[in-house]
Image 1 (tube, rainbow, N blue to C red):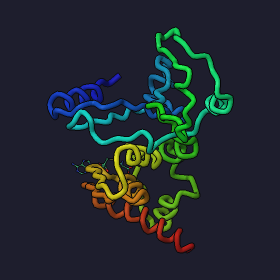
Image 2 (image 1 turned 60 degrees about the vertical axis):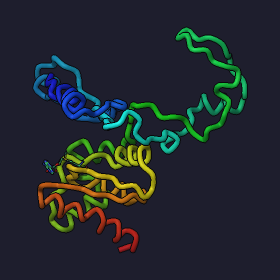
Image 3 (image 1 turned 90 degrees about the vertical axis):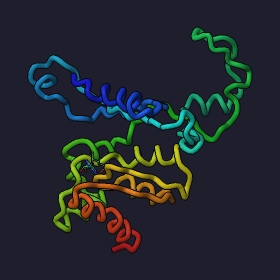
Length: 221
Ligand SMILES: C[S@@+](CC[C@H](N)C(=O)[O-])C[C@H]1O[C@@H](n2cnc3c(N)ncnc32)[C@H](O)[C@@H]1O
């Protein structure tokens, strides 16, 4: 297994003086088995099913608000809020749970740092069959105009999560390696300003498709 990503993390921390605020795991069970030689031919490794996302910052307490990214309560939590009672006291983990600790309705649960994109989105963004999904406006636009879609796009929901978690409407979001500009499009949809940098002109040109496709949808064309 290559440890280049881990070396990069240490270099970001030690040489660029960035703080690691939190590590996120993007779980993706639909990912193709890689490296194929080890997983499917020699059968000496299991399938890699997650990607790491490192949230790093030059300051130790960058702006963030987990109330912007609350998820739906689980069924058991909903039941607990309805019932209004549970066993308080000390847990085997040594946490002391007070009599009312869990009874405040916060309009949603604090999400875990394991992100599981909706299955549809995973299929679109990660598997090679992604390019065949027929209802993705970016794909449709690229096909119609003979443009090659960017081969390594991020799931839109992943970008939206971090924009909502870490910024407010009106803030500026920068992506220095923009590719198909998933970040710029998500930022614009969420009312943020954006600045995106991409070295390959063909990817810049293709990224316009995101905005033109969205305009066409709005206008019902
Ligand atoms: C993994 S892709 C990003 C994909 C993007 N997140 C998306 O959802 O479409 C990385 C991009 O960085 C671009 N890139 C690499 N080195 C660069 C540099 N020095 N300056 C600007 N862009 C660069 C590549 O051309 C590539 O499109």
